[in-house]
Image (cartoon, rainbow over all chains, first blue to last red; front, side, top):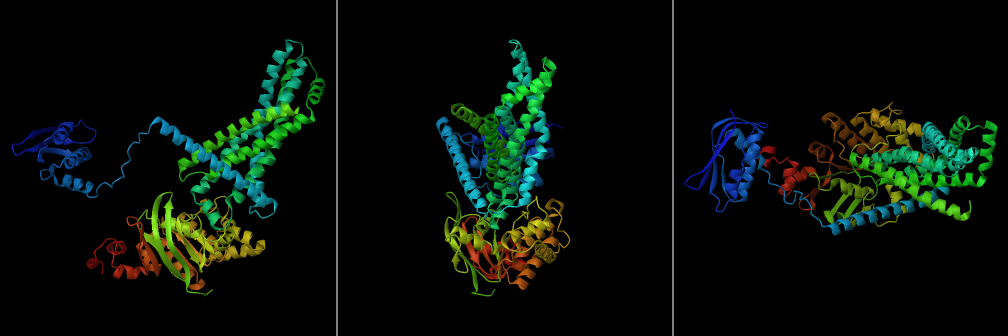
Length: 375
Length: 256
């Protein structure tokens, strides 16, 4: 039987609501808006009462609506007379109203103006930057302690971080660098052949890989791979109170968790970069030899002559900078992580984004500096 | 070990997050060898008070005195030294998940003592025996149940033979029997080692089984309502809220 609702105002100024049929969730239930309108209407009726003699089955579908009616009735000082309702319904409604809504508990959607919104965002950015600066300061102090032999960290941890950030990254670095070397060689061959200068593809690939591409690509790979891992590891430790456990034992989390990770990346990223350059040059050689009419010896000689020590050291220095930036972004975001699974995800994302932004910005600055220094 | 009777004294502690005051004007004294309960309803700032006591959160006002020495009023170096006399068991155990149980317990020993590897192994073994986990040295925390993690966390907290043990909700997440065993363990450790114990909990069974001193925090009043032996508070404290809490809200006539 379908649910039905009729409401009439009795001569005693009472709103009589008659309920009929099955009031079940998911079925088409009548709209209670007319009742609510009656209640809000001035002058409001003195009371609202119910007749449930025709009521069939009921569940939350009915009780939730009655609760809304009671809330509106009370808000308009209309007496809510539940005597006509079935016993179970009465008890459930009584239970729902037993504990009053805590004042101020309900969150209102905040409507803030555009300017205030911009202001809040700015303040948040300023706050974040301050956190980052504080973190950098603490890291410098921690390195000071390390060099004085006072920092507490585990040598076995450092070895493990070095392995994770080094040997285990070789496959992905090989693949990406090899392909990038090939792409550069393709472009080089296509363009330079036009001028009959195909052999200079070797210079193009070698210089590009050693000076710019290997450092930056390896750093970006490591930001996604290791920087993200650092943020997630430290963030999870924070959520599990493991960081607190370190602090209460008097061990500085920066000394113990951050410094070894930063050192691992500072050592390993230049080495990976060196390896990446080599792989890129190999990829370039592969393409060069198959598309150009040159011998391996010619191509190799051309390559060796094109890369000076300056380029090599310049590239390695860059990767050293990128390595520390990636590690700092990962660890800082990990330590700044909030207290939930969501927060770990957010800080991991931020670590990667921040890492990549820092890499690209510092790459631009370093390139300008190098040009001015004539490196 | 036995010195002055007053071991920990809280003076006019105010706990606040920014401008939002959680608790104010907390004053209580913990004597040496006490099992001191920090109790109160959910969200009243019990765990935050514990954080203030172990140095994880600076109080808005006031100070904690350990053996008469102000904790937050001291310099950072001295605070580090004082912290070394504490052992803390966190709610979830907070074992370092990348290390084995033996490494977890041995870390502080490795850092702060000159013991050799074999000696550390021996101490770790003994501490694990104390908490009933002998043989679990080479397990990783994720291979253990919640109760075992808490016990291992306790062994780690006791690694440096602390003078004060702090527990954050020791029975949370444990079945009644494990919770009871942990309570017994706390009592035995106090009796045999003379350790002062501070426990944050709202488990009535625990409170009466082990506590001989306490402070009751109230979220609405934002301050302490009572301090003293929990059994006496239950029977004769003038404040209805305190008595009701300690009787699970059951009126006194029925509770006898």
